[in-house]
Length: 256
Length: 321
Image (cartoon, rainbow over all chains, first blue to last red; front, side, top):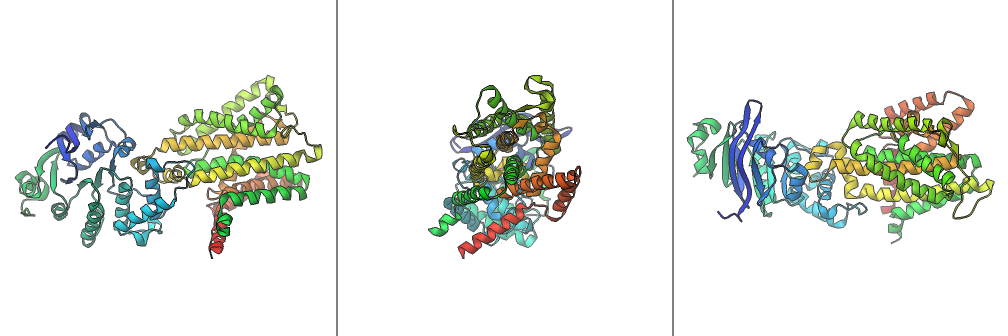
């Protein structure tokens, strides 16, 4: 792999919360365009890793590089401006506003839109928001207040808001959590379809191994703050450590 | 085409300004004075609703009201500058600049801490002003009569001239403010109010937005203070006192943050209640205002601006057919 292919590099990352080790010498290289899922039981360090990449937490040691630039000490705002966006396990949306207005605000943060005397509801912005709504199958919910929307729709809107700025890396924190079993696949299908047209690197945290196998081309398994396996689904899900600490030995057969 | 012109905010504002200026010729002089004072208070209230859009309320807008008033007063007495338009404009710019200096300190705080810190600043200024005898101490000082582009109106038209200038200048800043509210950073204030974490993760700065909002609120407050000082012909440290700041909060809560004209309507209501209560029920006007505020919080929590917004939406619907 050449350095030009690398979009994200984590080197020797350590992070502890008191006696709890959340990251123990994490070294991860991620290539442009990869769809990577992070798996592991609760407290394994997946979300901590995501929070360090997006600047919410600072590592105790180690560095994180985005396209060769050290972003370890940058704040979430600057990291977002550089091209790394994220969604949240609990959707972080603006409750009293409509879905359309939420997207308008997300769009308004981009440099080209940040003007003090230009109406944010310009025809170009409206057109782009309508496109995004269409890609995420959110058209029917455009003018509804988001506090009234069902869980899956809120998740989609949260992801759509992260995508509006056209990031290069999108991190999704448990995109299907809190969503009914029968809704999970349609939800992931919608997300995958919406992201398909983007030249995007996607990193997502997920507990459902069927979803992990179907929607990612690389899996990184965490256990007690360490990476215990990294590779394609066949390699990772057949790994003994992963079976013992993450998936359970008899629960899953690796997909060939 | 005609429909577009009717919907145009600038056209609507010019029409409203013309109507008010013409109406001023037919209403009694005391009412012209009351409306001018209401505009002065409304300008400060407008500053507070700019902050309210970002989830903050300042309890100390007396600070900028006082700075604006003293700026106009000192320019009049010390520099001989009596042109009302210039005094209002300079107070607007100068107080905005002072706001920009204070804002980074205030913007670190939220909720009651922000409110109380702003109050503390205003009380510090009050304490300083009452001690400076050179500018009248607790008695304040008298401002020279205003001129308007070199013209000194007769006593009969002095109030009306100031009223006209205040309508025009307030109209201009209100339109500019509406543009700001509709812009991306202006809308971002509403997002900051709801979820600062998400705002940061969208790549915007809630700190910067708060600084901008406070600077705007300061500039508006300064202009309001200058207008009030010029209208009264007198300025004293009461401008910065906490009860004065409380009146601005009253106006903002009564108006809500949904409509710009509602703020001036709420300010006029305050002035009228104050004038009539003072005349017919001396020493009880705070009681009447208190009851008024309780009722408005219970029955119209979004403020009278919510009615104004509904009316405007209905009008738009009718025009659009």
